[in-house]
Length: 117
Image (cartoon, rainbow, N blue to C red; front, side, top):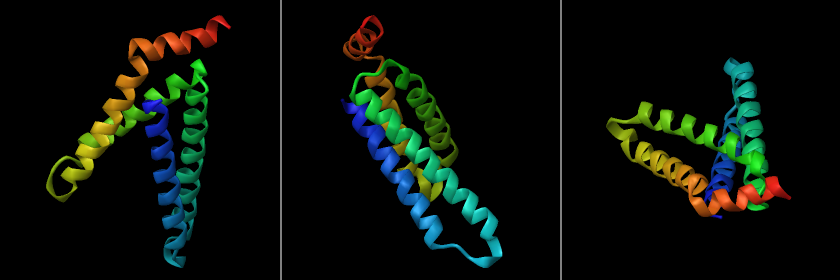
């Protein structure tokens, strides 16, 4: 439940970034702004779907969520240093908590029940 909830929060944040990008479009970088908006909104939709599927104990959702967390950990590593250090720590903590929640024996047992059903 914790992993699914945090994944849902990540999806909400990505959607917010997409909306902010759309709100700050300028004619100078219109193409970049639109494609970035589309990427953030598509990623948010995909993560939200995976979070909902994890909440409903769908086994297939574990792989995409783990991959998203590994990308997030790479981003946290890249942002380490200077004024972005608090953001880096936050990203790393959330990523590690979600991964730990997904590989926890209780989660594995619940997700494996989906495969047996």
